[in-house]
Length: 262
Image (cartoon, rainbow, N blue to C red):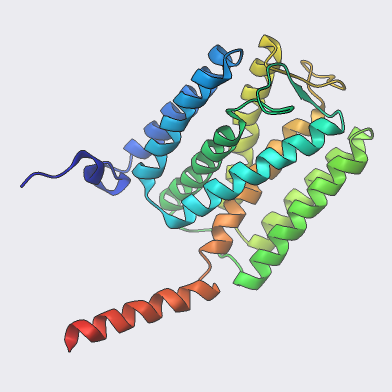
């Protein structure tokens, strides 16, 4: 029987070791697209669009789709706000102060972070991962995001203080979420973000007026750690066992099973 290609393009149809390879290739293609085509945003946007679709089809998760859309929108608004406050600038822009490909870049980053986090959970067999209730996870995630943004808005000219704040909320959030994999994904996000920042600034794709390390302010590096744990923490929150929508889903499933029995 013929099976459409789109149906077979699902991570569950591939061996476990294949997922990290897909994630690495996706990250490489995303970076290479931006580094090569940042001066021509429309072709870059088209390529990133297809990478986004391929990743969403490959993982096929409602929670990933929600986070993809949320991070695409919020990440873009975050950039617009801080560009207006002179924290950084894009060299080639197509919509106001941002390049056209920016929302898709944020969305792809969110998928890669979540999929990497889930891979870590599988490798560790969910050891050292005992997340709190939905309410605690949601409250701490929103608080961490809010404090990080307020810190950037008011302490960007006092970088040692901002870095100390980022480290503090990073440690506290990881402890509250009771997850070593969350800590690991923060370190991975910091590493990947650092590579992207250093290369992008070096080729002139964007610029930091107050950059001191390879043209980059130090708090940006720690900021990628915060981005990683907040995105993964959002996934943990949506996936919480006592999340309100889980009852709705299980209720629908029960009704469906009862109808089938009748």
